[in-house]
Length: 91
Image (cartoon, helix red, strand yellow):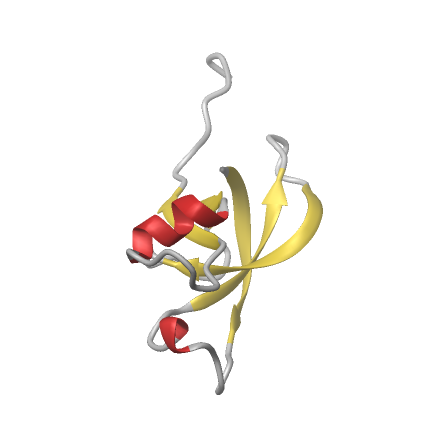
């Protein structure tokens, strides 16, 4: 899991049937300082997040597929929570 910021909404007219009706968001990892790092990723939104939100992202295929209740579908990255704040040893 990692903390990321939602950058944009992804619109796809044609997609795999398991993704029909799912909101897709473009996210990028953020450091404790709030700066971005790493690559951007498309994630399925299961937390009702929006552009600008800090989110908790699960990026692990088998765990992500368990949320959908499927074994072999193309599901890898899911937003599972919206982050209010991160407390690092009282800071």
